[in-house]
Length: 262
Image (cartoon, rainbow, N blue to C red; front, side, top):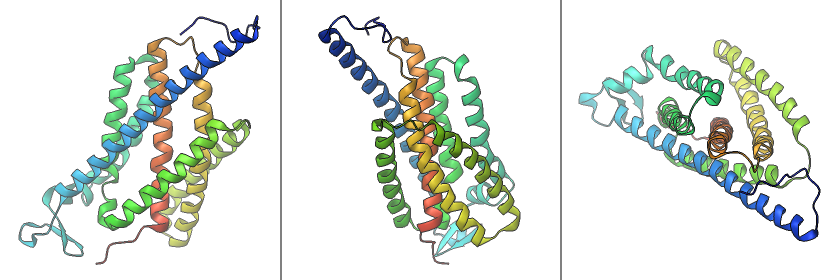
């Protein structure tokens, strides 16, 4: 990358165009790295979730520990993972890890940060693998592609819009905290109506966060960043978009997923 100062006045139209073209190429490369990391994380999550589901279930009743309906049974491993107190470790472990990555990213090497992100993606796959016990595989695939299409459109909007989305971001962050509190409350209420409202709000909030985060990540790019700094920004950006995608997918699945027959 050239060491030109983006805040300095251009000495000619050709210089301005050359600087702008170099910035655009660098920005595109940076964003491509962000999306590549995110997609790799999603692929690892999907493979981990499917692998855990296959290891945790069986159609052989003789070797089963418990039934989940529809001719599907839990193995001993599956029972420990989904029905024993271990399930809380599986549920909460990704949350602890994402906080660790977010707060330690500045002190980590870029390669270490990327490996931790991919490990987190695998752990998330283990955590959400129970969706295969609740919803049909066909509906999971359908909702995934709906999420991918919506995410792509929203992220494209965040990347191309000239509108400053920072005010919207502040509002969405407040909404996110409210969503977390409401979800915790509903763990005790177990209200299906309240859960429906939470799911609708969750889709809207993470849809907005997708556009906002894309614009924020775009603004994180700086042409003079060294390779190490740029790589860590790429991982952090991928983590933000990954979380938006996963949460939007889960809320859409709660709204439109078809549950397995018992």
